[in-house]
Length: 89
Image (tube, rainbow, N blue to C red; front, side, top):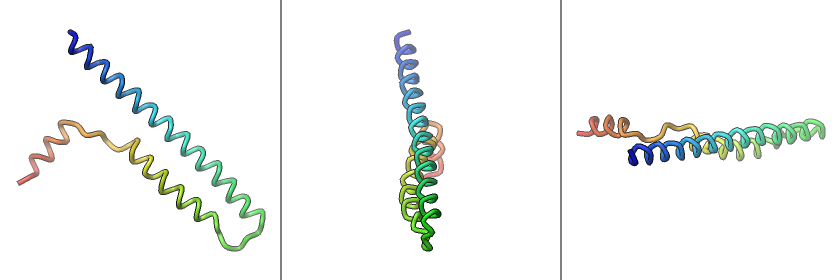
């Protein structure tokens, strides 16, 4: 019974961690959209010819991409490991 309780506690801890990561990602995405919209608006209102907001959009976008990869990629499971082992010569 204790092992089952420990397993449930570990699953709960993992679930809480994943939910926190997702929440942090959505906050990061909202900040990216709002701040970069403001930057593009500044560019538009100043009448600058060269689209300089591409630099913060692209740079921050790379960071956002890797944040998304960390949050949404599938976790390693015993099933995935077993399938990969079967593919090996």
